[in-house]
Amino acid sequence: MEALLRKHGTGKQALIPVLQEAQETLGYLSEDAVFDISEGLGVPASEVFGVLSFYAQFRTTPVGRNLIHVCRGTACHVRGAPEVQSALEDALGVAAGETTPDMEYTLETVACIGACALAPTMVVNKQTHGKLTAAKIKEMFGDYEPGEPVAEGGAE
Image (cartoon, helix red, strand yellow):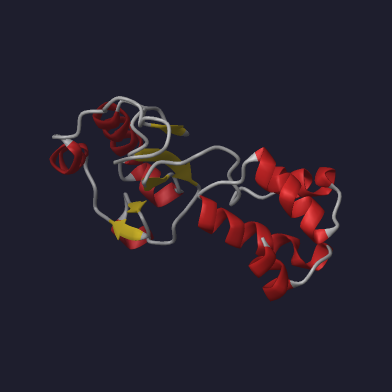
């Protein structure tokens, strides 16, 4: 927190950059982190929570080690995104918006990733995959078996 405050300063103008960096470091913004940020910036916690709930980029729950975004834009939808999403849900054993019990994958949908020529598409850890089909998803994730939850204290 001290490094973030030195870098961005305090007050409302620093709120979003501090939240972004804190989330990048922590993976998500826990309630404790929000209160620490509130105190460090001198911004009421209610305002910090208001920003978190307004912007979709912020997370208040942990995400898996691998973050998958399935594009649900018009081009992707028309070219088979619902089938791709369904294949991912089957392969991972979770619905959109959920994380596998072993914290390996989080599956989310997004309105558009801006790669319409490659529709349907998904982004896995910032890498775009295009011209997807249910069969391609099965090839990519067919060997995955959702494991047990990671023991408290993290992965080995």
